[in-house]
Image (cartoon, rainbow, N blue to C red; front, side, top):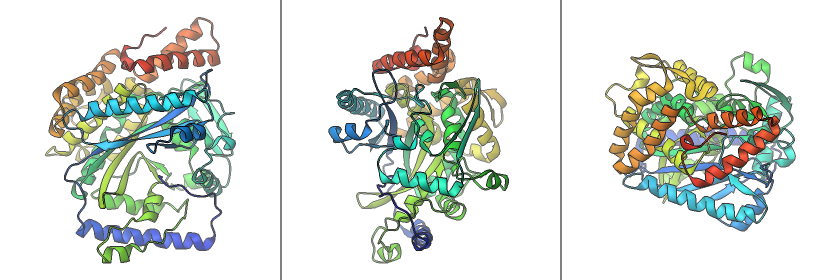
Length: 491
């Protein structure tokens, strides 16, 4: 959401005014798409990494405010839980050695933050869900003190009108009821940003939707939640349920969830912003003083603050972004499907697969999304979330196929093509895509390593809580090596 707000109870007048401002912003955005010059001459990329803070027992450490104060680095900010941080990596081009530059930049940023965290008896961990979390940790008192999170919590609970339920079936079954959105803080993700032109946005968003299932399958890293082994990428199910504003009656009526894959291919970025305004009531109705019509009329660049804030409370797995940098507006696809970790080089390999694949698919003469029903792309996404690297997916002109076979036989060569079109150094291209290849050949992702390690520890007599703590300790050691997860030993 990128906005600090004070804890606030909103009046009816504020809500009505905000709704009017959102619609006014949407009208101005439509005019800008027709007539404005957006920055897309040198399309940059960006990364966001959500992090956990853990103590010496590998349990969550509620010290993000103290760490941020001492770190004094604007690239780090709070996230939902007091045991979370977020790193916003400065945008860059990936041509040449850009991906290697990302790697070194992230390693250095995490090193500095970890050094600061250790002054507070904590350490950083990049993992999709911290396996040692319990329901005692995910309570309202452990939400970050930033007013926006408390306001968001109150608004979601008020919209729902009852407790939030989480019910996930995997190898185990987890059923809980909660009085806050705090369980969502368990989800720590890796987000990629890709700047695109207005004319190309729809194609890049559609391509991102097509490959979402493949990304999750080969990048899964969240098999445990509250001591239960659930989906390979449990983060998907947890995020969808923990922020659901709909009681059962609205679900039965087909009201759309705020964590949303979508329901159709699009022809313009406007389709997505318009759907957000049409389908979803405001959660944080905070209006700005800007009159976007007057700003546009006077030759300025409207901030469209209300539209951007509203967009930040609709949690699409691939989100449209309007932003301004250096006085020029630009558009981005924000790819939000992946978990954090296991290592920096693993995350960059995931990035190489994403950036390369979408570039190649967008430039095909006959786009894949014209051959794939949208509902099948969504089915692929949820199948991959459940089963990870063992998942079957359905693919045009092939039919049902194991995701590893699809990646090895079809998608890795396409990703290499796309990276070549971005001008990525061939050595970096082969190194990073080679990591994806080895995950497929070995069958080892962060998720499978966690499950197999815990299974080995339990077979040796450890209880589940003890096995999870020991596994997280070993994970932390291996993560610091920056050796890709497919090389990690089990047992």
